[in-house]
Length: 408
Image (cartoon, rainbow, N blue to C red; front, side):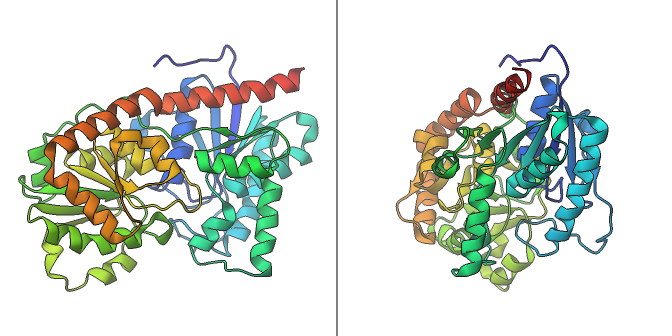
């Protein structure tokens, strides 16, 4: 794919109210958007929390990561989910963004998540004479995500958060979302510009084989070469549908003697409790944490990818795109977002349950031609419709639109 480039360098200050970088979907989207923009001639700075991995030198990227002070030195949480201490961290992040906006003079404030959009709006209004434009990048529903993590139930507090979410949905000179479902939800309450769907992507070279043949990769991870491997990658938390997947594992293993399951992600401790003493654990491989930059070799030794997420909070599914780019058939539930991604490349569970999930995996295990056909369809669809370069092109167009209003 040809890469759009700008004639003059524009500066983007991304606001990431999260422990960037961690090996999970939100952070992958932030990183890959920044890299795609850099390839298009933009200078990108990411303002984030004090905790998180530094970007590897192997990326050879000029993206600059600037962190808040380590005043909450005990805070080391990397997994997704609300935490009251984030209020303090976000207040510190406002100060950091305000400083960077004054010193680096960005053209665009790009606020990730609802918190990032709110922080960007505060700084934009405080420095109004600078003429900075704000792009709000919504990764899902704020309230629904809190409910999915069991931090918020019905009542006045939930009503308050729903009001706050509607208010933030209207912030920014432009709004982008990571999923079609989220775009519809934002559009229903947004009274200014229409939100634009900017789907996650997969690397344009994701279809290339890794350096190791499958047999060598299977030996590396202790998996017999004759086994059929079903793989889940990503966060091991409730709002990713992990409860369906965990309950499906014994059904998959008992349904086919060749079955082997790979669980790659974090946090592992809570899931581990459900596996203690299980006799079939010799047919389960756990890789935790899963470094994003090692993901390709995990998928290269797999036969099927699993994404058990329900419709839920309207988030995108980065793991699904990685499966597609690796040429894997994907087992998932029959939702609007999943159909948009996969079309005919998905093997859709007939019911939303662990039984529905396991039955879909076993159908693929029993039919090698079906696996091959769906895997090839997914690889082709990922290359055609879901590259990070395509994501970058859409963002460039969004930026151009808001910057044109500044110069008008």
